[in-house]
Image 1 (tube, rainbow, N blue to C red):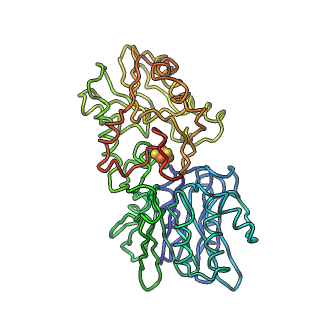
Image 2 (spheres, rainbow, N blue to C red):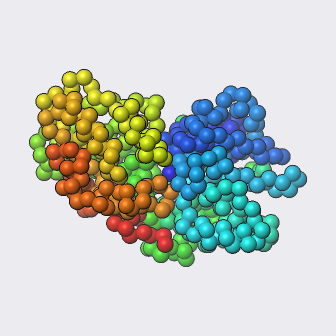
Length: 452
Ligand code: SF4
């Protein structure tokens, strides 16, 4: 998943970047980093863990500059090591220097990396961001392209999802893949600085004058004088007629207070919940698996007229279950993470709402927890269709073999979880939950991968 941030023209660039990364911490908790330019040098600091732990006041004090870019990482390609943290840097003592942060995954990573390695380009990590940066620097330094032309070549030749920010000593470049798969927006702040982020929530806390979404295959060059726009026709590149935004950003990944792909995330989630509640069983109360399902459950409750209750309490100091890379760590954190309200569930029929089922192991434990707390019936209501295929565009879903819906029928999944009934969001209702359904990737549900 990952989150990016970029700040241009602020004496507090590092501090603002850090604030933005705080707002995007939910997009990645493995590692984080900031690179800052003072016009002469680009300095960077990266570390494993959360923004608040990596960026101490002592570190921040050393990172002066007017341009900063940052990143929070959620591992997809590349191991969970510091070498794979971003931003990536290419710096020369007296020549140009570059720093890059990106969100997404590349499809032809090895093909492009092999080509560059044959030309003598060295790679220090296995991370997509480094490939993007080295591709650009190779185009500039060896092929003598301008930065904008280097990025245009990248967009035409590198396949995959990438919402990217590139800093030089004095300029900031923003670009996005032709499918606009991962979110990316930018704004002018009230202090005159320019900011770019994965999610609008990161811009909201920086006091924006206006906010805009980056277009597919668009490049913005931000310099002291102006913002220049360069647009490649996405149809030159895409195999699909429309953009293909990740629908899972609405279902699970993005914060509910973000506006992405021109829709309010919380409204999409409420709509999903309302659609899910149609012609459903009689329950006493609607309970979300917090936090990502809160608004889906709220939509369900509003439409069905049943009370919405926060019967499960989440410990916020344990990381997001789905993000933990090891199964053993994931298993431990489920029981540490949720606790039922005392006596709340006793004798009640519950609509237990979750956003998705991936492996099914987490939900099985939660159903057991709720039943042990005295629930009479637990009806699982899932705010997405069954996840049957892996994602190759920036989400670390398990292999297809590990996905429960790939191995079991709906009835078998219901039995596995121990629930009294199970209902997934239907295909038709998934399409009704967003205003432009044709503009979304749904490959993890239907296997129809837009980028091959
Ligand atoms: S495959 Fe699923 S998770 Fe991946 S981009 Fe498409 S909709 Fe999103």
